[in-house]
Length: 261
Image 1 (cartoon, one colour):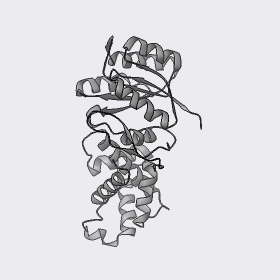
Image 2 (cartoon, one colour):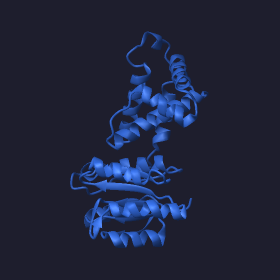
Image 3 (cartoon, one colour):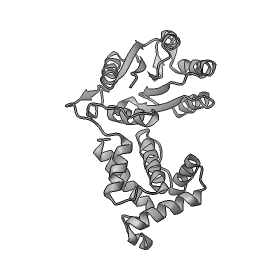
Image 4 (cartoon, one colour):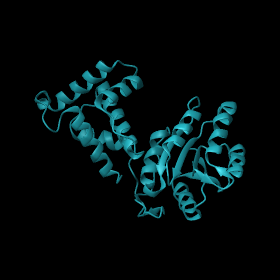
């Protein structure tokens, strides 16, 4: 597997050092670190990295200046990095502005509050956003000072594999298209929770799955219902643990527990 490249833009030296160590230990080649906006832009032009992590407050101007540059730069070169924004204060207006800038590009953006930053959550998000599964050291949640802490070396399962394993343990049939609908919906719920977003209703989840798999909403809903009815015959009586909403919430919580999220 080709090693991915990364750039780190951060004014907190200790945090940048820890993030560098974490990415390096997880098969990334960190090719540059900067706390200056202009130099950061020069590094992007020079290296075209796969991953860019950036604070919002940098020397020489806001990190938003980097995102403005990226929005135009990637259009010219068809270059699409994954951007990880890590900030102590995540202003909704700034976040919306960044999303608007990247709307017509292929750039994916992940947001983290630095005070609640979890390396394990970053690892999961990277594995979700990229087309491969990262093998990593098992990571403990950092303290409030934003330092990254590692424990003993053990492989970490991907979120996708964890969800599938849990569904199979509940006798959910994998021989159905609806199994993939269910996996997608659960992954989406966990992704939103990691990013601190509000939870979705079942109708919203069905709609997202319908868009993803090019099906109508009723097809998704009926498929999920048939899948769970087969595994849990009592679903027709809306038993506590087997209604679609409660079952998805159960798998979401068990997946997060297994992955220490």
